[in-house]
Length: 238
Image 1 (cartoon, one colour):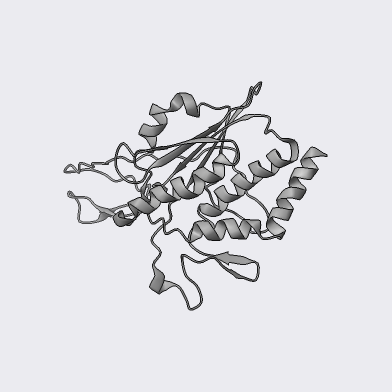
Image 2 (cartoon, rainbow, N blue to C red):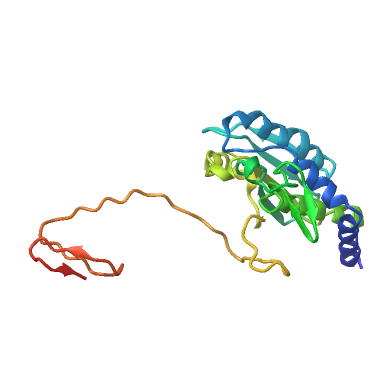
């Protein structure tokens, strides 16, 4: 019954306008990490919007200055006596440029607008909508049974849209506080609008420089399906 009650509370939160109100307030904060002048706004999003919301859920938050460049990172923890499992959640508060002139009439990147069953505004799908849902879910569980049943650690950065500078360094520095049994990162594509998408894994990327040395008489394998002129022949090599 507790699970059903928490789900019912989440449904009321949405149906009665709580989700739209919270998301609209967050969308209105122009957290453009691609615009250097928005650095104070990125900090304000964490300090004035997210940290107070987490405090109401019993989290203790710390805003960490970026050790490399760019926006700050918020780390929050909620520990429960006797809890043996720790869940680590990730989100990002920054969005790409607003590009206001490119929005059609009636829409603005900094105003949540509902049309039918769709919500428009920067961050609604990436990533303010997701971490708003996650915070609401925690709130519904706490209001239903008074405890989560696990320890929770959260990291919300403000530089994901510019490649997450400094994130690696912050995670290394605070690895003990972020240690967990499971990572839930709500920042990915949704394959079908009518149902949630869950990936049972983690994405990653590696940047590298590739230098190719072409020597006289070299041969191209053709793996890419292209053509390479052979210096010793007048005909192309496939």
